[in-house]
Amino acid sequence: KAGVTQTPRYLIKTRGQQVTLSCSPISGHRSVSWYQQTPGQGLQFLFEYFSETQRNKGNFPGRFSGRQFSNSRSEMNVSTLELGDSALYLCASSLGGGRTTDTQYFGPGTRLTVL
Amino acid sequence: AQSVAQPEDQVNVAEGNPLTVKCTYSVSGNPYLFWYVQYPNRGLQFLLKYITGDNLVKGSYGFEAEFNKSQTSFHLKKPSALVSDSALYFCAVRAIPTSGSARQLTFGSGTQLTVLP
Image (cartoon, rainbow over all chains, first blue to last red; front, side):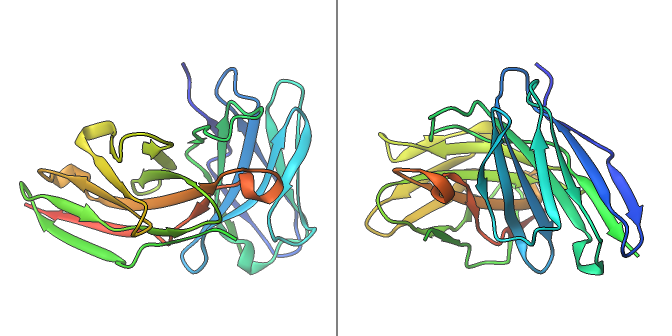
């Protein structure tokens, strides 16, 4: 079974631009979570989607948004990029539903650099 | 609120020696605990999890972890380290019961493990 895929793997943008990252979960997984990883802040939760609905949201500004499609694929968007948005953005998928014992499986990440 | 502490930023061990990467947690109620490993320029790879039952959990690549409720710890162990085990290790917790924000994973700051040949 194919793992979680994320595209693109690398992105370079300039301040003020916007960016869209894509995540395809493992087949059969309905929950997608996004995390930001930086050397200073570590791994921080952005949001979680399940059945096309945002189920959970971390403490990030409104410039960070996401959505999920009917095939469970997810996108996240960052508008008005700032230098501090440079990070590795990780997507994780899990079966979802009410299973709190779910394991999240991570994709390889998208490395975003903001100049 | 839930939190995870990994008290050691760096752990060095000689190849063939046992290794331990420490993790302590804080949650309201009972926890679900996870270990992940991250190799350079890669995503996180699941190693093992504790849900309930036996306090010693066995996972991938010969790793195991011991859940200690009284000490709120979930240390990762391996009897004999390999150079290829060198990587960044993350402990994570999710509280039970879960709803809303409690459903998310909270990660520790990570421990860089270096296995010396």
